[in-house]
Image 1 (spheres, one colour):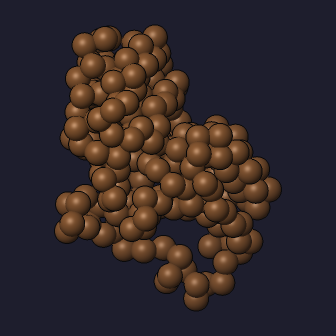
Image 2: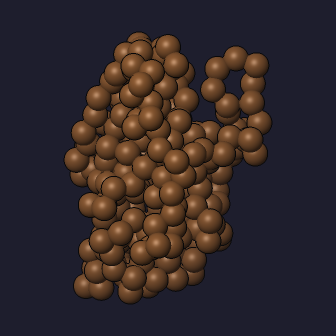
Length: 211
């Protein structure tokens, strides 16, 4: 590849998805892969022209930092061909959490346009509730569903007790659901993040967890 590689490592799945959404909406980049480490971190790997990658990484790390995601980043212009063996990993499933820890985006279901990265025409919102502890997230998601008309579309574990539940619905419903759900976490576990992404980008949609 002759384009630049952007790397953004974020603590927590929800801050990582918020950062990715911001990156995808900021500049013409394409998500190559995500990779999770064993310390609650999610690495986002994106590619594109160096100026676009630099702008996207800057926007993404700002978004992650605002959510306490402790971002670490780098932009590599024209990575050495020999380095790609380590930069891009084979898809891997962790036997411990029984979920993929290396993921390639699935853009095929979203459609494409003739130039630039794939896009999705969507009018809905995604809501994320991430906690450390199952009891907290189970109580939170039940409260979220009782508060508004939302659909649970997935649950994802990150290791270290980090669990994220993702819901879908119109913006008002998702905001109400996330507000109600996060309010239930106190005393049951640690709230990592509660967040709403309106009109999620194609990159985020390509990574939606499966329930």
